[in-house]
Structures are given as C-alpha cells and as structure tokens.
Amino acid sequence: MRITFFFRSLLFAFVILVLSAASVAQVSVVIRIGPPALPIYEQPLCPGEGYLWVPGYWAYDYDYDDYYWVPGTWVLAPEPGLLWTPGYWGWASDRFIFHEGYWGPRVGFYGGIVYGFGYFGEGYEGGRWEHGRFFYNRAVNNVNITEIHNVYNTTVINNVTVNRVSYNGGNGGIDRRPTRFEEEAEHERHIAPVALQTQHIQAARADRQLRASVNQGRPEVAATPRPGAFRDRAVVPAKQAGAPYHPEANRGGAQRADQPAPRWENNVPRPGNSVHPRDLPHERPAPPSTGNAKVDQKYQQQQEKQFAKQEQERQKLQQRQERDHQQLERQRADDARRQQVEQKHQQQTQQLEQKHEKQQQRMQEKQRPPSEKHSKDNRPPHGLG
Image (tube, rainbow, N blue to C red; front, side):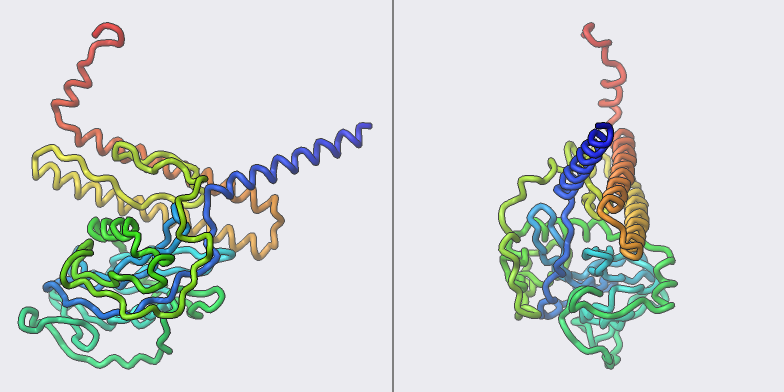
C-alpha cells in the first residue's frame, strides 16, 4: 500500500514538473531557424566626416515570431578612434543567439559574416583613424570627395567565398571561429550602441514592411543615409534578396496570445517572465524634460552611461547562461535537469531586470523638477488632505 502511494506521489510530481516546463516554454521563444540571407543593396552617400558605416542585419521580433531588417546606416562615431564591430547571429547549443554589436578601439569577431562595404568577415577595410580624423577607403565606401578630402583608395582582395549567409554555425552557417586578435579585442573597452542606433532599431521593428514574412528577404528600405531616416530621398532599396526566402506558415501573423504585458509603463520597465537576458527589452525609455537644456543633457549622458553598463551586465549573464547550455549538451542532461537550469536562469534574469528597474527609477527620481519633489515631499498624511 505504501509502495503504491509512493509511486502515485512520484507520478504526480512528474506531471507538475512537465506542466511547469510547459508554462516556462510559453514565455520564451527558442529560435531554431536562422535569419534570411543578407539582401543585395548599395551604400548611400556618406553624409559627412566622422560617420562610420554600420551594416544592416536581420533582428528578431519576439512579439511576432518574425525576423525584421534593420537597415544599414551611417552613424557618427561616439568618440574619435572608435570602430564598429557588427552584431551577428550564432548557433549555440540548440538555438540561434544574437551577439550585440559595439564600439571599440579595434574590430572584434562578428561571426565571419560578409556584410560588405569593408566588412568582409574579418576586421574592417573601410577606413582608419589618423590623428583624430577618419580616413575613408573609397574602394569600398561611397564618399563625396568634393566634401570629404581625407580619403584613400586601396583595393581589397577578398579571399573569402562571397555568399549572403547571415549567421555563424548551425546548418548552413558560416564555419569560422574567432582569431586570437579578435579574442583580445573582445576584452577591450567597449561602448554600447548610441541612442540614435537604438532608435533606428526601434523604428525598423515598428515598420511592418521590414518584416521578413512581408518582404520575403528583400526590404524596401535596405539602407539609410542617417539613423532613422526611413523616408529620406537617399534611402536605398534592396536590389534583390540574397537567397529565396519562404517563411514558416506560423510566422509573421498576429501577435501571440501568450505574450506578456507591455514591457514599459510610464517610462519604467515592467518586470516580466523573461528566461534569458536576450529576452529582455533593449529599448531605453524617453528621457523626461525639465525645460533646462543643460540639466537634460547631463541626464541623457548619465542615462547613456548607465545603459551601457546594464548592457554589459546583460551580455555577461547571457554568456554565463550559454555556457550552462553547452555543459548540458556535453553531459546529455535529461529534461528534468534542463528544466532546473532554465528555472535558475529565469531567476537570475528577473533579478537582473529588477535591479535595472530600480536603477532607472532612482535616476528618474533625481530628474524630476524641484517643484514636483517639493509637492511630493510636503503632501499631508493620508486622510488629512
């Protein structure tokens, strides 16, 4: 009798575990299909000195389960001497993970992806910094030499087989690993994408025509002269898709019913059920305005610094969790063990999200106009006003 009760209890626990696993799986999309091929397009004219080319790429919208194109664009370098390392998709364990791009003194590993215009899978051949000025290689960049004189012309010999594959590893992906030089660059000082880049990504995500399920891998806006300038005359459309693209039937449809509530409320991130840091929103809220230009500028600088630090913390945690996934694969762990790890990851991610939320709230509290602070601090006790 006791043995029967024991097995019934064990069976009940197993059912609860399975149901728990299903509930967690509903709030996290595992991407097992790589992004479309890179479309074929031309580079718009460089808008001015100091702008560096940031190549376009396919990002992923978890609300619609669909890839969308982030147009290539010219971005003013945040500091002289900094270069852009593009982000890239890479296969890790059982899913595709996006590695964010960054600014740094050297170009690091970007998956061996041939983005073109100086990014031929390793390093950058589009230009170099000399004495605080950026010199453009006209062989790979579209530059008006009547306005920009710091140019040179060096033909780039590309020994890499040119294809339009947009991801590293996995089935059909680029087979390349970081060099020692690229690994060293990975540990140098980095700056996260600037605010204009983030706004550029948000605008692309909101444009239905840029979804892969709609444009079939051939976006109408493939590149822009400046971030967010999607309606500019100089916008460049894709000539053709990099390869035939046929999205899954369940992609690009209506918003999923199992999505959590909106991630932002009153310019503050709302805690959700994100399992991994890559599931967290990377948007930053619009900074409040006090009417004082100097105060607002100082706040924006502080916000940029805080956002860059938070982004580093997200990436660090993501990398640690990816190592956990790789270890599970090596150990050939069972479903119960995998579920335990995923629950641990979810706790770690939510703790990090709550930490960042408190930091944002504290910063916004400092930014509130003095009149509002005075009004709040001198409110009468509840029931007496």
